[in-house]
Image (cartoon, rainbow, N blue to C red; front, side, top):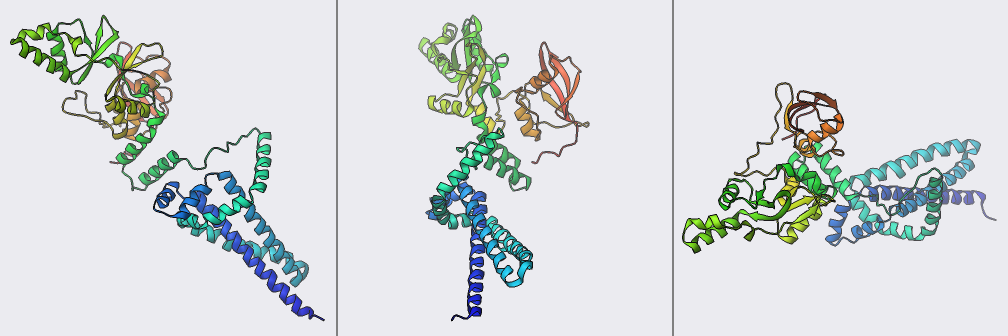
Length: 442
């Protein structure tokens, strides 16, 4: 006959060992969840490119985030509930009815320390390393539990729909652009990334979200050449202009018939003078003989696509038209590059220095045509650019009228004073934040 005490001891040790194993599995699931959700896909991709098979597996297993989280949570909950049940049975057998309370207290402490805090703390300290180690067994787990997870997902989505909530299973839990932008903002706040570097990288990321209309030079500011002007006057205009390329129109400014490049014009004039042997050849010169066909683009073109078109066509200059074909403005490759690197100035630029400096009252004197994006970029402000592209446009939109000179407005946490108005255009404003803001980092 078997000894009851030896059977009791064997059951005690088996139950204790099972609880330890289950707590270890819980720690594995908790650490895996933290590592796989916190790991940077960019860093995992870099490790994968160097031949790290674990990193490649981590990239594959995180592609379906809903399935991944469902499998891990299912496994973690099963082992936690099973370990708690075994502990309750064990302590009840040892201590009687008071064992339930003791088991609850002991298991809460054990699960909290060894199955939650400790593995998650380690995982968050080296997420890419841990993710590479756990990716393969977690992948096997997701395959094994796939039918159960699918049923759970269907139930969850059905319940959410009852409350008017819809989930998009195709949406990845990682957004590359948001991840980079967030990392840059954190790095800048900690002093690890300079403001100029942050602005350049964010500007490059944002090209796909912005249109030509937002940065084009308005048609009222375009310097153009009338094809009917005398040749010598055309030559003087081109030589006096700070721009290399000038649109050529006939009869009215809307009727652009070509674009002339200063170098092409001067080469043609020089060649004509050499062939004629005197200076009168310049007076008989035809501007249309060297003008290039105009290149028109819609105002809704996205900036990154337009930049690719410029590079593909090997041109730097385009005229912007609206949906009716009316001229709205012009855009150059330099304009797009300035959205990344900031203002590009050379010895021929005639525009005043765009560096803004406050007066004694903290007011900034701003050109009305300055874009809100450039103003925010220089001063680290947060003026909205959803309804208007320029500072003057924002004031007109908020005032719902064209303000008179001297009028003052306060909105979005800033004070705007109209300094000068020319006809229907606001040309100068004084702007300052209503509450003190930190000076932008240099």
